[in-house]
Length: 259
Image (cartoon, rainbow, N blue to C red; front, side):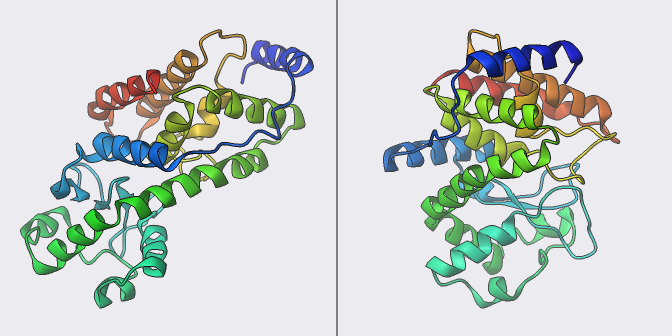
């Protein structure tokens, strides 16, 4: 955050009421709607896209939120979120034995992944993921609920922590705010993991909120502008070409305009 914006932040903290006690509550219908939007964003709502391995990536992704699962020997910078999902599903439903025991993705390469796309194991996994959409939504929402404390711990200065909290709840108070927060965290993370950096710069929700102008009158338009800037910076800093994804990312951000 630049010095000019820091001055704005300090003034804003003096004049805005505290939102520290605000809570985000979702009805079951809202949760289902957000889950369907995330599935549409990640996999066009298609069952066959519940198991994918994108070109240019070193890992497959699973479920409506494209939860990452690394093959053995791959140590990537992103959070391996599929194992969190797997463990949550195991509490609520019976899983195949191979899935319970697997620490790493059984598919070592994208080529092998698609060679075995119609195997019994892969079809079994897609069926499980199709049947557990509501549970996947719960995992995604729980990650959002846990995100703010993580981000506050990551903000070094007290005034910046207060600013971060205010921006979080300002977005949450908008009609499409809860969806935007939940989707962006699922999409690009909280922004607190030091491994999720290119040239020292992150691209998660923390960076988006801290980059917002507190004087902007249209909160969601400012959230989208800030997210676009953060993601563009990621592409510019990336060790390999990620520009092919930027257009799709920007299209996704535009969905935050509407509830």
